[in-house]
Length: 248
Image (cartoon, rainbow, N blue to C red):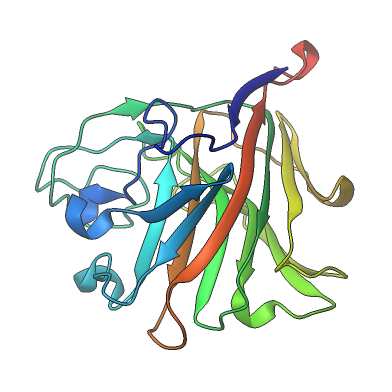
């Protein structure tokens, strides 16, 4: 059953679904703020030439425009928070659970960039209200350097981070498609496996599964400056489906 749908209609981002800052607890909201454009029922996340680095002390010149559907972090000065890997909280943030499913299907229809300095992704991270609830399900990760007219390498799989129950199982699959055009990328998340597909065709299955709520992360990342601006990641829709009763 469809339980989350974002088709990006209208001129304003829906704040009941998205928090437009990338892991702001480790930096500042100003540096973590997403830049984006809405129009024609689509979201285009942007990296612009004057955009500041996300967290220079942690990631150097990395620039990010990202949306997320949850947020958990401890007080300023602590090391408590999502995807921190030892970082210290700089700005205290309110807890948010906008969309944090446990199991089901997550899919997006989107087109990537072929800019060699960029990567785009839809991924999920554990809400991390306990340190071990921190694995990642990567629905699709696409580096611009891996995008060509006739094929692209699409990253998909699991990373454990702080979850001792998950082992790293991530691959970049070479598929015969032009990722600069719209395609549907999806993950079907069940208690004992996660299956990945592109345009409705099964690509691979990982036979393990995080067993806790996770949030969506949707973003474009620039690793070093150069080329033409703005860098763009265009998303037509994002959907989340609840699991069938037998899979809960």
